Image (cartoon, rainbow, N blue to C red; front, side, top):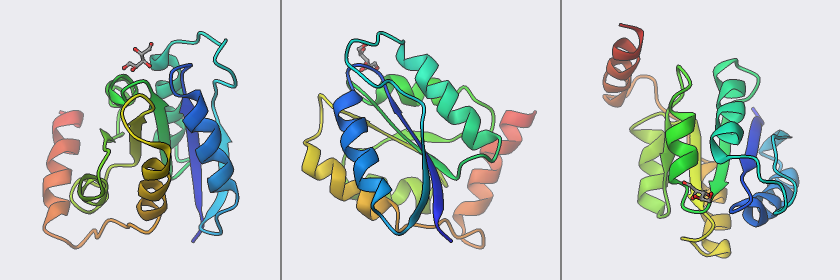
Length: 152
Ligand code: RB5
């Protein structure tokens, strides 16, 4: 089933956010892209506000996943992880992107515009869309332990 995605980034990630939004909107695996901003490098909205807005949509079931950008990818991941039920990771290599879904069932992928080249970011997102967590895998019990801690 085609995915609903949230995309966002602060002014240090807006160029990649715009580029990846255009890519995702053309991708048949994507049903809808919800853009939570920012729309320009002049918009000084802080990265935590962008990240939590996106993560709340995932937590509420309004979107399947979120893709977030800032300068490093780190701040948006930290902020998104404050939203209950959300597992956000920063990943700039293919193995980490793969394991973020297959091992950790992360719904949020973050990247740093100041860290990774645009073409690599494009390809990692392309591969990310192919990945699905296996609820019957050995990893499921471990992810459940995160949820149990969060709910305790
Ligand atoms: C710029 O505010 C920069 O600190 C931010 O984009 C991000 O890299 C933080 O983690």
